Image (cartoon, rainbow, N blue to C red; front, side, top):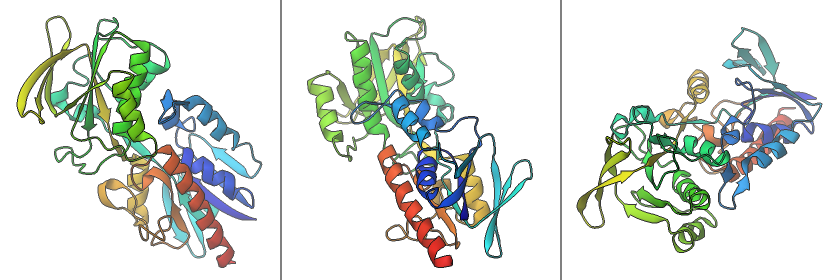
Length: 338
């Protein structure tokens, strides 16, 4: 039985580990105290509003396998090629020797305090999409004075497609996440006015365009093509927004009870660090694969593989499929390496 290290217990790590464990011993490393932290902070998932908790439970059930050793609170700090095997080094200095390595270190969300002009961390009425997920999850959508907001504004592309933040790429999931959250807010607050400010809407997944259309026709979500340049607090602790309607070409001001910043994806700290140490670091801190078409789970290093959103922003559906492809690639490598 061969031994494989999987670094990161998110959806990609768990899905690939469950497949590889059919014929191999898998060491699944996770630096946090729990697996699936990026799913557990969600309420529902697009496009069908599936329960995030139920999906997490389904993934976690795959860890009930005697060939998988899950090591929580174990941060991997180095991966070194050692003759015909790989040496994994954790933060405590302990070494593990394996036949192949699969990096599934995932992503982190953009720190909205870096966009100081939008007021996150300064004004209580400004929240992120992650904060909004928690509000929806616990059915407690409130403004800065703990009242139900009468007007909620969503702002797209915070930390994505943005020269100033250094992230010129699209985070892929923010557009449809805003549509999903706006619908969820409407269900909880049927009398509220809900607006989404956008650069352009990228509904490129199956059923995403239909969800966007339904949000207008059934849920009365209003869309404004424009960017918000500044947010500030009013005397009654509401949020005043300065923006431009780029369709009409006119400046505009709006007062909202709650401003929701749709924060994009960035490479996680673990992805950045391990990518550099292994020589597979690519643009924006994500890891670089051998080729983007036929060898997208392989790297320039023999026996070192990657999967999931450590490569680029992905939906959960993308991540699961990519993890399955990565498991197949690792299995093929181990067979040929015999």
